[in-house]
Length: 374
Length: 71
Image (cartoon, rainbow over all chains, first blue to last red; front, side, top):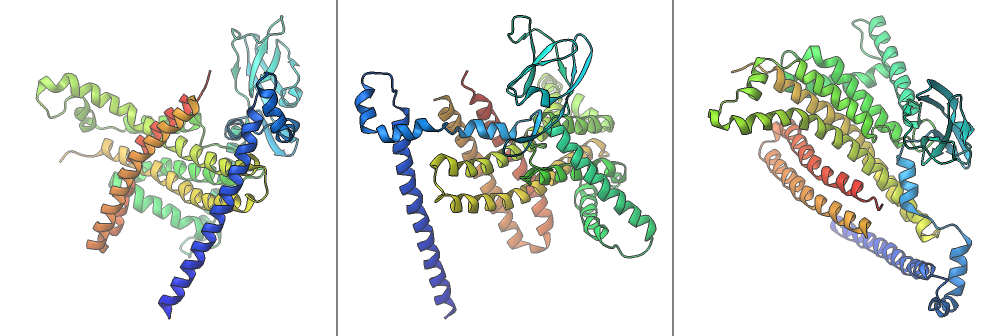
């Protein structure tokens, strides 16, 4: 009886999967035929007959702007001077430039989505591919001009939002601990406490040892900063949606923090292991450079891991959404949305896992640096 | 053309990571089945090893992503 039910549900599942597969394939063949005809060069003499054959399709394809998934996806995961809200509405963000003339501050609304140039105090500026460039006297972009861009971009604004939320959460939780000394946790406090205990007992203590307390502030900060930014990145609407932890500059700074903390706290055994390892002396010319590269490569791996994981997650979600526009049919939307939902749930796990891995490896490296010899 | 070669590169990088993480996960499962009381320790070690393997694969993916830049 029980076995039979399982079998029936399995058969049903197989039928559903096959139906979706067949639907998927039939749509795919259709649209590929359309895409082929759209590629046909219209000008050449040879193409004329082809155009006559596929004239109908070509007319449809030429009527609309062609959808380029790579461009759209890269636009969404890259940093921007505007925060796109909906449709044609964007939130303009301040542009802060340090040019050879001096500091210059203006709103990115002056660029009108990159369509117009802005005459600043010292130079004329143009927005090209979301980078502010100086326009020379001849109306062309002056590549030589030195402009340091300190703008509050979309990523920076999203990071401020995350920091604001983290501050609200942790100030209220810390206040609750002060007010309720010796009492059981309540509300938000009882949600955050197990995570803090988890960072302490499962990350810091086993990897660092009895000196863990000194490093707890850094570990907790990295953990919650990455976690909150990852989760905000998964929210598609306004306060989220920026690819903050998928930005290599941010992960670089975080990895740099880890590298500095590890090397400042390295004891004599750590440095002995690098400059005077327990190997025959004629191996030193190989071992010392390898160990010195190890100092750099460990945080470098941290940087790439977080960046690539989060960026890859965003690209997958955006690619699945793009399927609807590539196939130009609503029939694919349920499949696409189902996959996106699945990926989003998986990304939620990844958001936590990457925060965990970053903190764990930081704790591991600190542990290696402060370990006493035995 | 550049795009497809970059995609092949990313795919090759992922094959290695797949084999590696599969091995790590499988052995960890065996370990936990033998000694369920050591599950939490095995899990931590497994995640560290998986992260290191994944790091190597992601280098490949990032190089493919950067290489996918037809100039």
